Image 1 (cartoon, rainbow, N blue to C red):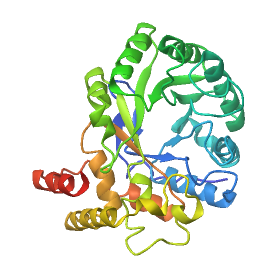
Image 2 (image 1 turned 45 degrees about the vertical axis):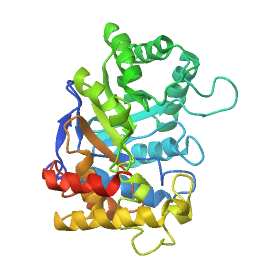
Image 3 (image 1 turned 180 degrees about the vertical axis):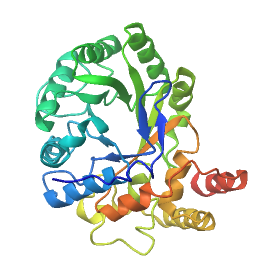
Image 4 (image 1 turned 180 degrees about the horizontal axis):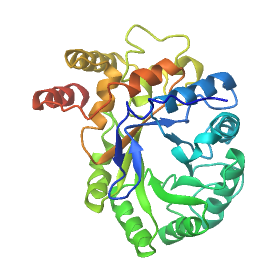
Amino acid sequence: MYQASEKRYQQMSYTNCGKSGLKLPAVSFGLWHNFGSNAAYDTMKELCFAAFDLGITHFDLANNYGPVPGSAEENFGRILKRELSLYRDEMIISTKAGYDMWDGPYGSGGSRKYLVASLDQSLKRMGLDYVDIFYHHCMDPDTPLDESMGALVSIVKSGKALYVGISNYDGETMRRATEILEEAHCPFVINQNRYSIFDRSIEENGLKEAAKSLGKGIIAYSPLAQGMLTDRYLNGIPADSRIRTDGRFLNENALTKERMAKIRGLQDVAEKRGQTLSQMALNWVLKDHEVTSVLVGASCPSQLVENATKISRTPFTDEELARIDAISLD
């Protein structure tokens, strides 16, 4: 049986999620990639061990993570049962529902029917009685917001989730969701949205400001822009890279001459800060206290070590921030 490092809480910082009592690590582990049916069990297991040993207590999943949809939850459930069950109360486990999961009219969206059924399936796949956070994964214009939020309320009351969150919402809809959930005394604590030096959408759609004013946390996914904000592609495309092995979310066409020039410019800023590009990119997302945690994935333990160490809310100078904006913004 795996024995966790006794030093795991000495090298990670933890921040309250908005105004709630729930603390999340600065770096959380996302199982969006590399935990599907095409992944090696031993590698997945070592990734989970490496994450927990680094003080990464939060493991983030969704019903459709794979490939095949559901397989990431199944694989994580196997690891949890065989190796990590002793540490369940030291872990934050989250999952989501919203995108296509099964055929027919009840396999996606925001209906009460779908959200409740999906969580039941997720709990079964992971072998859990409850998750710590359950998210509605995306806005659904075909379902009244009252219904989707009402489903989250009943899920908490049933004991199947301790907290709830929303993902890929804009600021205006998030404000309306907050009113519904707070009126029902439902512990809504977090928003999960894409955010990186290359993607400032939560600044443009009002989500970041709404979360700040309402006291809700933000966890940022794709903070490394699917690997572009690393040194991974500075000297070509490696054979074992995401572009070569998957290609669903990042393909070779994204690495244009203009984009590569921006990446190299940001690399220069990072080197002058004494950081790798990925470390600087993660620190940039965490520079404002509105962002509680960044979600990172990994294909090998060494990537987790690089991204979880030297990660702190290291201040940026005004000159550094201006330089990053000048390089990255169109």
